[in-house]
Image: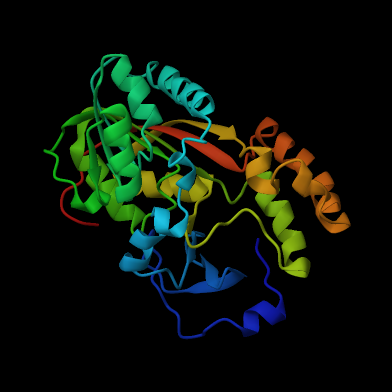
Length: 308
C-alpha cells in the first residue's frame, strides 16, 4: 500500500531493526520520515511504528509544561465546555454497556472524562504520565490519578468494570504489554473502550500518495504517536491479548486539528489547495466507513496467563 521515494529511502538507517510490537518480526520497510523519526511498516502484519523512538526520559519530558504540553491549562484558556460535552458523549456511549461500576481511564490527561463519570456515581481512577497534568486533575477536580505509566500501576486482578483509553494506545512504548495489563485488571465481563487514529482511513491513504512528492503528511504525529494502527492491526492486537471487538465506529479528527484554524488555510496558495482537496475527503471518510480516527468497543474474552 505504501511507497517511499528514493530520497527518503536513501536516508533510512539500514541497521535499525526494532522488532514489531504486534508480531515480533524484524522485517520492515520505511514509509516516511517526519520530525526526524522513521515511520516503518512491518512487512509481516502491517503495523506502522516509529523505528527510532525517544528514550523513556525523553518521553516523560515530552509530556510536560517544559515541552509546552497542554500549557493552555495554566491560564485556563482551554475550552472547558467543549471537553466536558465531549466527555458526556463518551459516557453516554459507555452507559449502553455498563450502567455503573469501577472505571479506569488510562492516559486520563486533565480528567474531564473522569469528572463526568464520577458525577454519575462511578468509582473513578486515572493514570497519566505527565506530572504537570495529573497534578492539575487532582487539584482542579479532586480525582484519583496515578502519575506514571500503565506498567507502573498496581491494581488488583479483575478490579475494573470498564477501562478507557482515549487516544492513548498510539502513544505507548509497548502496546501489547499495555493490553495484557488491561486484560488482567478487567473483570471477566469487563469492557474496554479505546480511540486511536486509523492509518488506513480515506484521508491518510490518499494524502500519503501526495506526501511522497511534497514530503508533507499531517496524519502521523511522531514523537508523540509511536504507533499508527489500522482496523486490521487493532483487531490483531486485541485478539492477541484476550479481547473480542463488539463495535468499531468510524470517526474523523477535527478539521482544525489536521489543517489548522481558518486563517492558517490562507497562509499560502499551496496550503489552500491542499486543504481544499483534502478537507472534503476527511468529511467523506466516516460516511464510507473509512474514517481517519476510530472508536473501538471490546469485551474481555479470556484471561491472559503470563507474558506474550
